[in-house]
Length: 251
Image 1: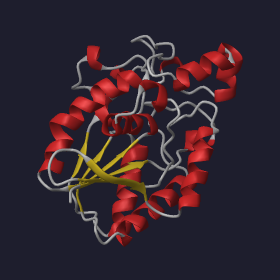
Image 2: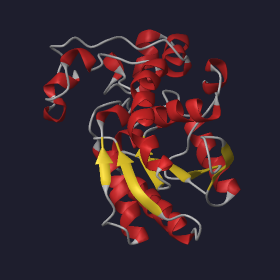
Image 3: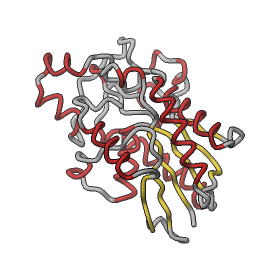
């Protein structure tokens, strides 16, 4: 049975400091490293999961989480493919702001709309703004007009799902078990696609940090036979609740 494992990176330093992160390249906190270790241990315990290939974004918190998890699994040698299309949602002018400061500046209702609506992006950054991806060497080969100034979840969906269909799915269709280590919003986009979640319902979906979610597919097609988080159900519920209570839901 073909399997997909999705894993949201562990807590980052800016998560801990209550800042909007987006495409800003912030490393894991100590708690985030511990979460990544636990994720690797959970995957190692699964006798029916044998990860064959790994996908990450090009942001260090995703890369670090994957590396730590693979080390715990004893599988550092696995092939890893990285792509900017797996990046977190670009938070535009909110990136680097404290969530409470954003509420004071823009109002609670507006920030909630940017955070949770499917198609309402935050204010854009200009191409001259240091927060625009064109100033980052890792995107030097990406056409400037393909780089976001700000994104809604819909924008993330539209850049991630074609990569899923064209690249990642090829590995799954080759009967490989795939691990995707990415971000809260990029994984929400993928879950929306896989589970056919409506635009209204996806607003209520939260993905906990550092807890693997496993999709078991039927032998043919992409029909899901089973989907579940690994580990203690109470711990999963608590971690998910903590994400939902983050005002800005920084990923």
